[in-house]
Image (tube, rainbow, N blue to C red; front, top):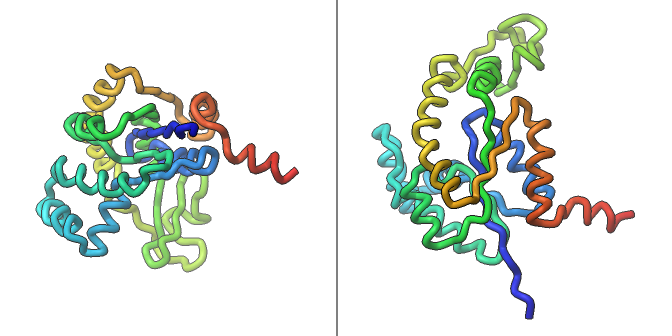
Length: 227
């Protein structure tokens, strides 16, 4: 019997780096199971699970969810994906989390999206929304017909707190402080792969080429089978 070698990866990148888009493409091409710690946390809080309530108690006080609580949450989910290739997104965020994860699973690759903070800041602060519908505009590539006005209703657009320049700057600085030691940890282990650029569509081909050295591109196999 041939044992199946499972591929376990982590994707990292600051908010607004295109991490969600790249993750979606990885899932589509390489059939990895994508696990977002943020989505998992929100689902548990919404469901009112025991661990979700514990996490919520810290969040409500404006504190970070402790490493051991996050580890328990992630491991419970990963245990259900024992025979799947997977991609972890948003975890680990600290070196203790990375060390704890290493004790249970061997991480094959850490994909780091290195996008200049100035590019991300311009990208995020250009975003405006229509509060009633959630319709999103971008002043750079999808602007409203009239500045600050929704195309369909004529009502004023707003900028979310998270997208205001001062908030974006704080978030990016916090990410850098928190994440730099984690990137150094994985670099020292020889599994860090950094992809730099200012556009997701230009970064993606390099990520794709790298992953093709690790896994078959399932989308190409599917296309070939339909010919």
